Picture 1 (cartoon, chains in turn red, blue):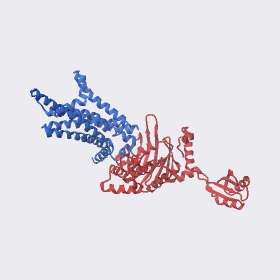
Picture 2 (cartoon, each protein chain N blue to C red):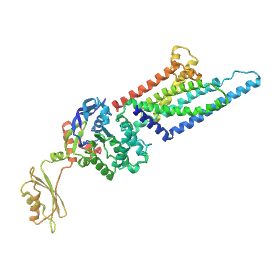
Picture 3 (spheres, chains in turn cyan, green):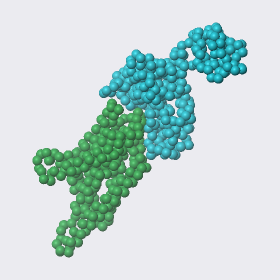
Picture 4 (cartoon, rainbow over the protein chains, first blue to last red):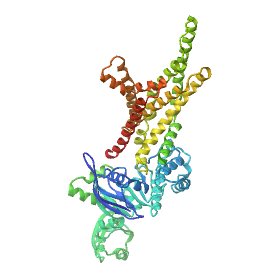
Amino acid sequence: MITVKELTKRYARNTAVDQISFEIQKGQIVGFLGPNGAGKTTTMRMLTCFLPPTAGTATVAGFDVLEEPMEVKKRIGYLPETPPLYPEMRTGEYLEFVGKLKGLSKPELGKRVDYVCERCAVADVRDRLLSKLSKGYRQRVGLAQAIIHNPDVLILDEPTAGLDPKQINETRDLIKSLAGDHTIILSTHILPEVEQTCEQVIIINKGKVIATDSVNNLQSRARGAESVIVEVAGRNGALDSAAIQSRLEKVSGVSKVLFKEKRDARNIFEIEGGKGRLVRGDLARAVVEAGWDLNELRPSAMSLEEVFLQLTGDQAAKGAVTPKEEIAAKGAIK
Amino acid sequence: MRNVWIIWQKELRSYFVSPIAYLLLAMFAVIFGFFFWNIVGYFVFTGMESQMRGEMFPMNVNEQVIRPLLSNVGVIGLFFIPMITMRLFSEEKRSGTIELLVTSPVRDGEIILGKWLAALSLYSVLLLLTALNFVFLFKYGNPDWKPLAIGYLGLLLQAGALLAIGMFISTLTKNQIIAGAATFGVCLLLWVLEWVSGYETATWAQVLSYISVVTHIGSFSKGLLDSKDAVYYVSLTFLGIFFTARSLESLRWRS
């Protein structure tokens, strides 16, 4: 659906996007992940024909953004970082205006406005002035205008920025429900968002793509061997941690036992197994057979956050550009 | 063309749902009303005076009322035009709605034309309001309507040119106040440039005076349709629209 080849955007002093390439299949929902200032918005603006690229090509639904911008624009729904609302308009009027602008014919228009109002849950504010809407509603009206002409591709720039947790969840669910009909690219600097909503993730930093993969693959790629968190407690009084450790080490398939911490009677260990080996069952049996309580046993999946830091950290080490602290300090990672 | 119409509708609507249009209409009506009352009063006064002295001066409503009134409207217009154009693009840039317009399947030219026509339409409504006053002239006198119509045509042409320039200026900034003030400055300059012709006849003075918008409104106020002056206004309009288009395009290369 979207093919980007060595797309570059250079400004007088800096390069915002540096030869990025990726491909997105129809119906996919792809997360565009990177710290603030990584070039996410610039890339999206090039895809929506708002900014012309300096070099490279981008095609949307088979149309080049430079050669046939009109065809591309017809097929794209775009929600910029701040929803492009006219404060003096009412929700319904606004959606009609955008629908007409996107080329909907009169009979279609009414139906589509009804549909998107329903879909984005803004039907109850249809007659309200946009300037009077809350942030959550503004964002949903923004989404509604993006899908009004039923575009093939939806480009959403930080769709959940500035919303409260409940609104964030609602917006994410809405976006997820839109996948399938539309190919969706959404940008974010919030990692759990990608984990929750996207199938595919493109990690971008300093204008370069540093990883493109499915969310699952990325997690397991960074994780390597399986590791498990085990919490063991004694029935009566505290247990000797060293004794538990040596018992756990004897379980077949365990390659390393790491004592993490001791809280009252609870001992927490992180256990690494050999690659591809499931040691959880054996561990549970070993603990129970020894007469201890097994409070917790869970795989310690590496969060995307760690993957992200690992990847951008590697980059920093190679190119010595962005130290992790700087990314964190900017509030990029939450 | 359909897109021009959509943009035109939206712009005109936003003038009329906000207080801008009503404020302008009210102020324009009051100021024009005052001029009208003043000039008609003076006309009546001269008429009575000439009767009292027993000498008959030739009195002409077209020459002595309509012509000065129309040139006054031309000058008042210079003050009102910045208020009409200042928000055209700067507001879209500030609120980010420009991104919606530019990423929609609409040509830049259609956006610009729609906005310019909306501004011109609002100005036409202002002019229409002043026409109410002339109803009284026709009721109590018998002026010739043709020079009046040509005078109005001149005012429209002048407004078209200045609105295009104001529109261009509003693409340059996100700040409405800056756009308004700069447009006001340019309008004022285009007015006062004509003053040099009062005492200087050198080529440079003629050039300056030619650039001034006021120089060209004279013939229209007199009721003469001079193609030279019409060409001046039309080319100024094209220049303004052309610059707006270039500026809108450069927005994308810069931002």
